[in-house]
Image (cartoon, rainbow, N blue to C red; front, side, top):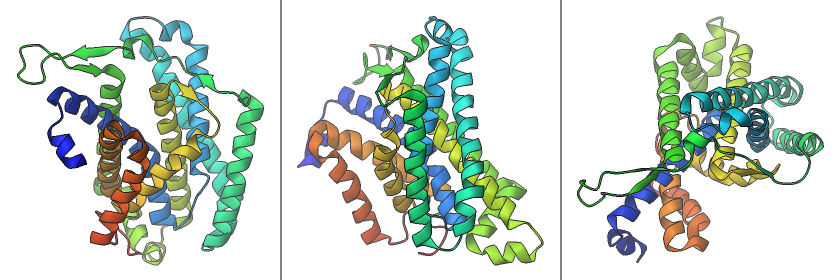
Length: 317
């Protein structure tokens, strides 16, 4: 019935839902890509990943509030003086926390999934409480930069979809997501570091035999994954325009679904999985909001019944 409803949908509505779904997918990809590499390469179950998302959101929001005069200007160039520092600060703060977290929490429990679950859940609680201490327990409104508010109107002369309003921020999110995906794909497939990462995903022992320090590679991947989580959190904060300390935990369901759906350790699979989750969430949410979360999990179950290793697996599960 829902498939029929989608086919009968007004083309303008379909375009709006598709752009919104792609924007959501792009932001979920930013959050999930680091975790899929972390688990794929390091075999580490980091259930504190949601806390890094929340921390990035609060760090980015703090810079935006501090530079609110630049963010409130109608000029995009002036807005960038607030947006870029906010995203950069979120990335750096989450990355530095990832560095400390890996050294103090993750390193002692390599190879033991049960202990990893226990210590990362405990670490997540500590980070959440620290967020409460620094920023308080209440929701914080996040001002979206003035140049990213509003929408573009498609020319009326366009057939079928003429006059459709496309939200500026969602278009920016799609472009940024594609750019990060392209950069990560290039690093993984074209650089020496990427070759080592792919080799480490398939056989860590082989990389060590070649004389490379796999521990440093692990550390770099974990820090990069944490930084991406922070970046995704900052983007999500501007998307929702309100943040809470537990927003990362709420997003972890989508992140885990994307990782499993795409295939463990696969950046390409993670991207495709995030796009599918974003589109399904928006399409089903529009037709029946109460079924949006069910449809996301149902999508994962359906794909795993067809391909148990995910869409584009890198490691065997």
